Amino acid sequence: MPIPEGKPIVWDLPIRLFHWSLALLVAAAAITGFLAPAWWLDVHVWAGWGIGALLVFRLVWGLVGSEHARFRHFPVSFHAIFGHAVEMIRLQGRPHPGHTPLGAAMVAVLLVVLLGLVATGAMVLGGQEKIGPLAGFLSFAAGHGGKEVHEALAVGLLVLVGLHVAGVVVESWLTRENLVRAMANGRKRAPIPRPARRGALALAGFAIAGTAGSLALLAAVPPKGIPDMPRLAAFEKECGACHGLYHPSLLPATSWEALMEDLSDHFGENASLPPAAAVAIAAHLRTYAAESWDSEAANRLRQVSAEEPLRISGSPFWRHRHRKIPDAVFAAKPVSSRANCFACHGDAAGGRFADTAIRFPKETSQ
Amino acid sequence: MKKPFAVALMTLAALPALAGSPARDTILAGLATEAKKADPSFAGFSADRGASFFGATQKGGKPDTPSCTSCHGTTPEATGTTRAGKPVEPLAVSKVPTRYTDPEKVAKWFQRNCTSVLGRECTALEKGDFITFMATR
Image 1 (tube, rainbow over the protein chains, first blue to last red):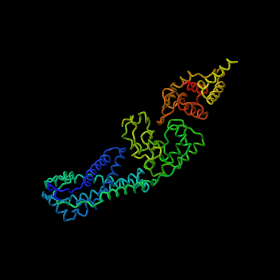
Image 2: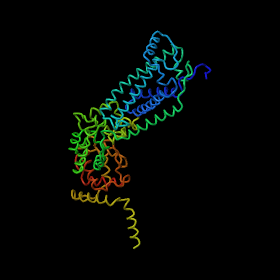
Image 3: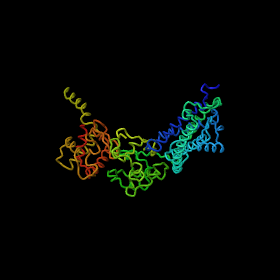
Image 4: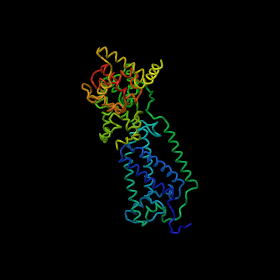
């Protein structure tokens, strides 16, 4: 059926919703990734999972969606792309019913780069933070490697988005057809396209649910490099009397040994213990010291400072990570000390220290 | 025989409020014996002396902890904070009735905290005055 204005809907509603949700989530991920401090990681991660779900939808829609959404109809031959580029350089406009050749190529590249970003993001989350579907399979080092790629891809994505927007503006001007509006109301000068297959949306929904379900199953695998540590009553009672329970993974064995050797001057405090308790606690700390964990904290805090090898908050990594936090935050009542990891790191007792678990107490007005 | 019986009953009823727990009394009795040994003129513990000991600024201990109040808060009823940021339950018996009823715990914390604050062990007199004061709060 011809449409009154002569402009049929070439971008179906799902593809338009996909496009603008993707733009929104990529903006959220970019802002939280490039600009926001570490404790915005959970927002970044959720934006990433959202992008992942959209990508699954798009891949399905590229197979069974309406005509111009299908990859099969993408005009991405070398001849078409080259011809389009030459036209653009000569400032010649020629309307295209669906994607322009350069536009289609951009969509393809964007999809690949976004898939790469989601995958490497999951690697960082799994390897470094020991969270998510890859936590059971990746070492800290693998997560760190993923981070390098993730960051490079993120910069690449910014460039691609810039090119994409520029291309849309130039093409709109050359063809005198507002392509931004076309992506809003779906209408373009074109023959009436073939609609999506029946059940295409349901299929996309199943694909997203299936992927999410499989990832959730993978996420249930215990994280790699995180040993089962038995609880030690003496440790919890004696050490926990004055301070939160510092996880054994936060110092190397040599530091724990030196620390347990003299408890009568324990960071300026007399913390002497009955010998039996001291021996048991020392053994526990030595066994589960930083060397036996692959968590981010253990990997980083294995390197102690030469001047203060016993002080977790004296280590180079600790100082670097907390350098932007004002003294006032540490001095504020609910924190009151640099030694009080537990005030802001909700998962400190488990030694995890995930960026997603950082919460500043209200009173610190951060 | 009626009157003395009533008096005895009243005394018994008042005991928990005044003296608290038998375990605390035992600890205080032990400290009293020790204090008497150290000074034959010892004539009982004083809550007032305990109060001024609690609030005093001491010399000879670690510079970060010059007083009981450095960690325990300015009043016995206050919740304190250790230097590592962990909350410390109030010292006042009215707030935490189990205070000063476990001899091991009492010995351990006086030993540790006295050396931190005063640079020496506390005397039996100081400990007894302190507990007596806290029992009134």
